[in-house]
Image (cartoon, rainbow, N blue to C red; front, side, top):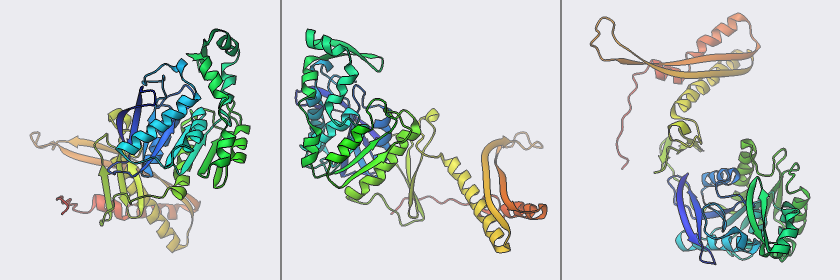
Length: 403
């Protein structure tokens, strides 16, 4: 994905800091807004993973810091739940003015409750996704705990949330109780996906049940079993992201097709980083470089793909041969790595160094196979077409501009 640093004004004329994620090589016409969890920020793990998944599905995604948080202007103690909702609406207006109106709102925790309320005021929105969201905004009061008395007495108090101090004012408390998610959902006629973990100890699973009951169809629920509230485990964030990416296709279809090719394969790389989109026949996936060399690590590297091509061809060739011979081969696994070395001609020290590429290939086969059959399969591995291309062909690569 391509990332742009964005700033836009909210209803109170404060400048909010944002990131706009865009698909590689595309000019999307579908846009989404991600609203982060209470006191979190636009760079939270859930926000970045979900933005990544949505860009791979052709969306542009705007994620921003609410007023008074992260790099956004304003004082957090002067904000309330209404401010969060208005910030989302301001983000939608920004997209409408400079790009396209958003069709999807995604919110995490209190951000999920906020997108429910904002969706009723943003006409272009067709679908909503909440992740670990409270059924009502007032649920956040339990985080404040004993500090509530001090806030009501002195007008504000410093509250520790996730080991960070936040100044919370009376406006915040009184504003929470003014909003009813149930009444909004009773009137709302937009697709909604509710994701929640049964093990969520911050916002209990009963909140998801209440939201689901209040919402109209089409509505869906996904259990994020085993995940914590913040989705700090990579696999949990990726699971939530992939489910959302699949779900949204039903309710917000692609406006225009991504890039295509008349050749067997095509790759496309944007201006940011090394993340590369690949078309191979009817299949689409990403290639990238590790973060250690400036990549985003969103896909295999080129040499990992080359290893994979050799390994896949090897496994398929062995399986085809065993099937033809009616041998009992139940599984074949190919492990590979690659290395490059440079060697000089020992008889001519002045000769230019030649490059020697070595692919180490290790086979595992399972089934009722005797030593003779196993030895024959090892020979067959060397006859796979990719192996022969790499070792026996005079390979030529011709390059020219596409006309």
